[in-house]
Image (spheres, rainbow, N blue to C red):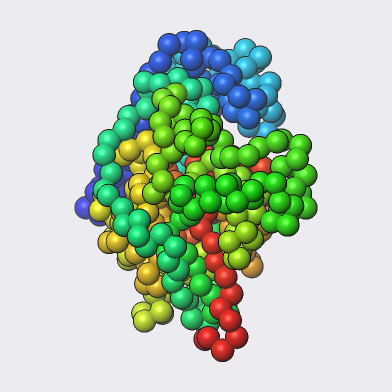
Length: 438
Ligand code: AVJ
Ligand code: FE
């Protein structure tokens, strides 16, 4: 094995250990907290933990490593398609101690497979360590889901927090201009990209403006206090139906006492911080706000061009600032604090057009439905992306404060139903440039 392969394998092993540390930290709790279902939208935490291990067994041990199944009898329990979320707590799930033992047994064999395989071989699951990228990203995505479950549980104590850089709130309403022209959307070169991010393809966009920052709580409160939730003019037809049936009047986890808005953050009440990007809003709320503001949500293509396109070099960057990995002065990622940073906190993380905080903070709703790119091919399985394509889901971009850098990049696509708000979701607005501005 050459030095490059050895170093790369070490990096994979480090990433595997890091994500596992995170999964174990989020489940370092009393059995009752792990076994209970905190919302019918979410699995019990212990289901996520065993599902992570079962997914790793399926893909790394059985598919890539050719290892005989360790516990084939539990496969059905942890198959997300066979078990609807609401009935997961009634299944004969492995208990917390047994789950930890199972996933650690899988992990030991995963490291054996890593040792044995040829990263430059022809096998597509092995090449560039794809199957390890798959399970590392999968585990991080479930860790973010577990964090959303912990937020719903209202149980303080498990979630770490630390200070974040200060913002530049005076620039809150600013927008940046993106001139008309083509860019390359998606990727052919990112080795761990999911199938839905491929292939790279040319998209030609008219000129537009996009907000420099995600919409902050101060602006969102103006929408609320202007009666935005009660004015059908601002809402998409499905959104107005959702609004009247749900009687929602503020983001999830918010309450109002007199003139003050409060929110519960991992079980602790605090006044809503004005300069923070709004989170826990659904697509319908984001869409209504944008119309109220005289704007609209960006399309997925507009979002990606503003995030990663470098018009001078005529190439896409992996992150807004370039290809170098995220650092604490560029983006709020990886659950450093348990919240988004104030708008303006990361001038060093700006993209070529000047948009800031596109990576980290909140998943940003776009106007686009989740659809395949031209030439899409499901890999390695249809149930990751393909079965979700169509009109039911909207695309979110950029990754939240709770997302790990391993599962965040300019081309990364997330998706959810337009009514979902327990995720760490916010948005920014865009508008088509008036005719004559190119
Ligand atoms: C891409 C976040 C919608 O959580 O359902 C996890 C990711 N896929 N396990 C989800 C996923 C398989 C997926 N999302
Ligand atoms: Fe999964």
